[in-house]
Length: 288
Image (cartoon, rainbow, N blue to C red; front, side, top):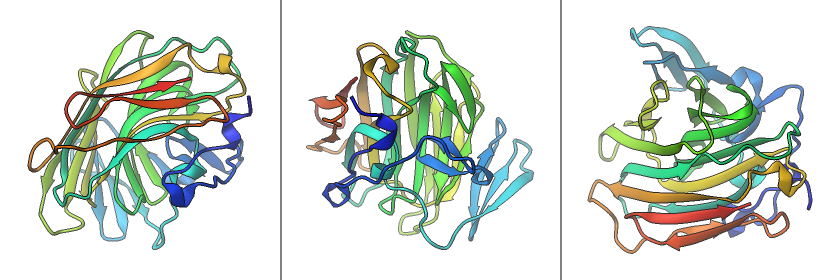
């Protein structure tokens, strides 16, 4: 086995050669899209949302007060998947011209890993734009991140926009808990690249809703395992994670004939398998 924190694998063939990712940087913090500057991570209060306003993103509280403003870079500084800890995932890119309106997935919280070495694992479904400079994701996390955490499983929803990331408050969950991660398009104007409103949440778990307003269209859907600080198989949970009841809809319903592609890490032994293809009740398994 080789340290998973040093290698991640390609998004598409153009990204086939991964750039090493260190697991400890004094000026950065860990998010479910890799390490970024600590100043670029913000908490969104319960009942609040994030709002794109020109070249800035506002954090707005439940009373509609602006509590923080983050200026976005004029260049895309987000890392592609192969430069983060994305070691195994299934994905589908929407090129149909009809926005994704609903993307939901069910999976079970795994056992706690046998070894405790300060590792962090993220399991999630997510959607991103074609530019890959944003991401929306309801995330199951083991270990620490910029949002908090420790040697236990917790859930939170994240939204990233060009290397600035926002998260809800983590909620601890027990092994064996069945989760449903949901992302929905709640408002949009056709033809307007910056007028899409999305929300992500874990069904039945209060405080996990992340709302992003005036965002760009999110087109790339994934089911992902992301890891940092892994050195051996005992640093993983035992077994595998099955992403099941994967249901994806666009403005014209369930797209027919879609096929999920996969990325695995043969070097590290994480294997992604599509058990059931399609946009209705699809299943993807990631083995550790």
